[in-house]
Image (tube, rainbow, N blue to C red; front, side, top):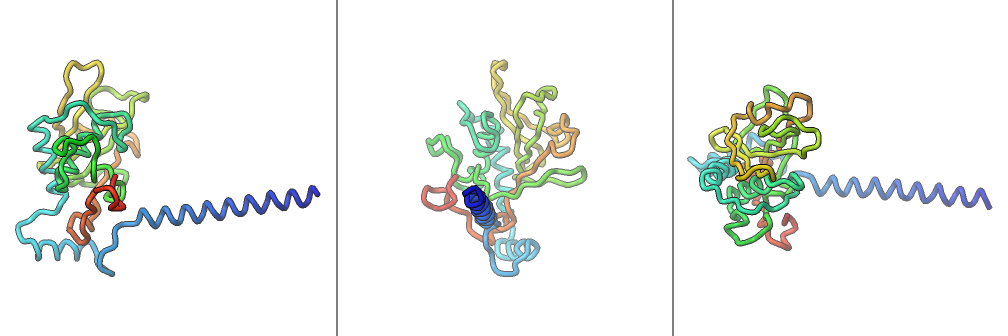
Length: 227
């Protein structure tokens, strides 16, 4: 009886392990970059984009331009908690810039409290920044320590977005501040409190979308890629 019980326990463990492997494999497939033409590379997608749309900039540039516009117009009211930085208003600003730049409209322009594309993880590649690596307009910059105040291990991560002029734009409202702050920083200023490896993370629109090798999802419910 004891041997049968042990065998049953082992079988259940094996099945759980197999199910875990299958689930991980399925998740990996779902998070793959969008499908483009077979064999298409980033360099070839870039060449085709400029040949097809002379004088037009990739979509990441439009996101960077949106960051500059929203910084200048200062439209942010009560912040909306976001997925990118839970519990912080900076992520709402970044997601609004992305939605605005990608053509679906910032939430306040749609009279909505939700983002359509700005927090969709499938649209972006994510990597840890290393000194010497350049950033581009439209990149989200996630930092472990905000540039607004000295490092505090109890604080959550902060994020901003690289504008079309190369500056990092952000929106911050702390309870201790009488007014929210719209920031415009150099990249060095924005990461100035982050000196340890892994404390600066870049999220970049995938090249398949930047160069319109595949169409953007609509962001609407039922599209399969709504945020």
